[in-house]
Image 1 (cartoon, rainbow, N blue to C red):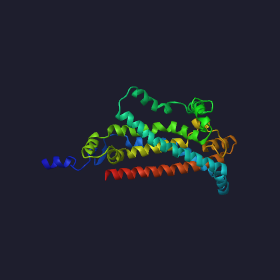
Image 2 (image 1 turned 30 degrees about the vertical axis):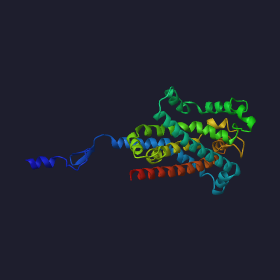
Image 3 (image 1 turned 90 degrees about the horizontal axis):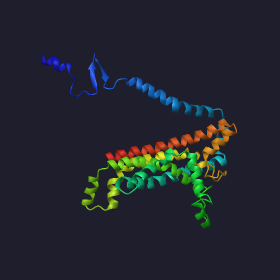
Image 4 (image 1 turned 180 degrees about the vertical axis):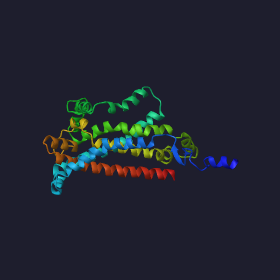
Length: 295
């Protein structure tokens, strides 16, 4: 009798999330196949189908036409400006976003909640409003520009203004990615390192930074990806001078206005491929950092 009962019970090694039923297995949460199918359908509808249309529209061009469209001097200059400015802005945000997150987590000061709320302002502020505001501040007759231009420093309508706009819209991605990790960090490890004679720099580089590095890389990747596709806040402060301050999204818009749909999708496809490769590299670095931390 006891043998029959024991044979009817699930074995000790069987996963608790499954229960034998009529010789099969079922999951604790029902509807897995339905939700998986809906998720795949939604992903295809929102992401894969538009990207596929982008690729297929580019096929209307021959290889020679495609190459001419994506490698013209004006387009190449826009690539260098777009990706270069996005990389600089993301690197700046990685440094100062970490500092802002550190201050918000580790210190108490008057107005802390206001500062914490202001970090999310670029999320809520329309990009066109951000661009107009930055232009009004940095132009020659603006509050900041009129102080800098007499010293030969011109920010508005230059590549430097583009970098500033991209820093503005990308900062929240780094702060909001690093902040929860800093809040969950074990302060006992820092105290142990200090008691063993480690300096503040050693404690940060050997104890704190390895734990927040994956989150910091994630915030960097998100800020970089956001900056590549930014249009609204940049278009007002860039000046849009060909070969100098013209970004790639503006090239695409210009081709669409000229009804050169194939040429616009060709340039967009190049940006998509480059962005995808860069994100793959960054994700690979994140996976390597996690394996290293786990080891």
